Image 1 (spheres, rainbow over the protein chains, first blue to last red):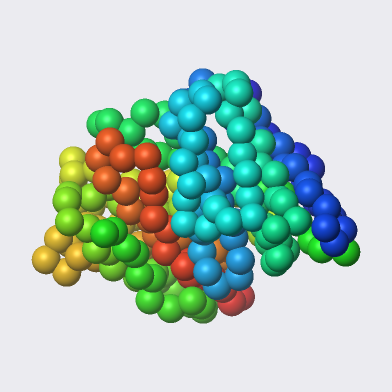
Image 2 (cartoon, helix red, strand yellow):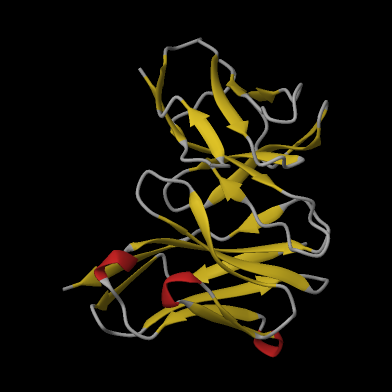
Length: 115
Length: 113
């Protein structure tokens, strides 16, 4: 079945540590996204990528980094510079937006907590 | 700039009652509008989308939404609530051909037996 796989489901970060969240899709979508979800704040865009080897900062990119070396993969690294990383992180992908309205397909999320 | 406002962070209805979740948007161009649903500890899934083909849009699980340009609204309704409808609902807007989607803050729906 086609879909988006996020791993791990739960992740714990120690002080000063970088951690990487995995996102893999087999939908053959060009665009991929990372969102952060906090209670009562909806989804906030961290980074997005329209094509391999290219990505743009979203609204809250500070303290995060990404790469897009393969179409299928868009890992997110939460660096030690992100002082409040505890949140639910969602990865999404979408086919080209023209004509069909940029529907986004989501993974099941990774819940990150600080030890 | 686009924006989405969902009125009411929490809505509580009795089983069998009408569900009404409110969404107002702001967009400088004709928008694409969406409703997504999120069950606990899961990702979002699409309920329905408006892409200018018809103002009344039917989605999955008996939900529908009506696009009203004059009111810049896209409210979500369901005639009769089921216990399984308890979840968080997000309204979202994007522009045709755009790669970014703006999400509202979400409305948590509670269904009482």
